[in-house]
Image 1: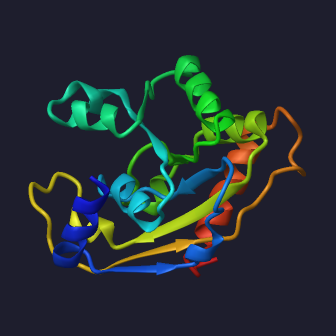
Image 2: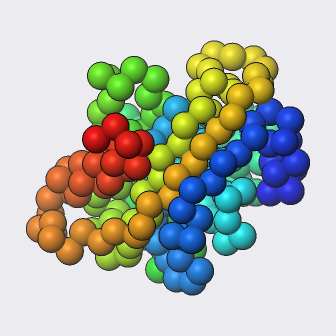
Length: 193
């Protein structure tokens, strides 16, 4: 799958990677990214040789063959309508085993910036796991695969990896504050802050 995605990027999304040196070579950490397109979970893994897993909404696992592919990519299904403690524990287990995990703090794709809502889940996981967070800002995937589009459109994509951050300054149970601090680190990479 990694090889296939790297191959098709040449045709549909010429990819510019900034800050790839900020990806830790060893140990567990959280990739935290903005979310514009269904392509985003595919873009991040092809920028590193490390095996990672990502959190995806449970409904995607019910569609075939997508569900089969997601399971074989080590993905973690999560229920978005309520606190999914089972999924959270699975994420913590993967992190404790040294596997990096990709999470989208917005919880869903955001096209209109004014409608962004930051979920507390990534803050909870970060504070519980006590691992670094690598913020990511992705641009252009919403042009390659806009919401409700049935096919890919060629457009350049840029992905920026920030330096790993720790949230040692956030009190242990301030999960929403932790999530918002992570989102600020992500948006700072856009150059718009």
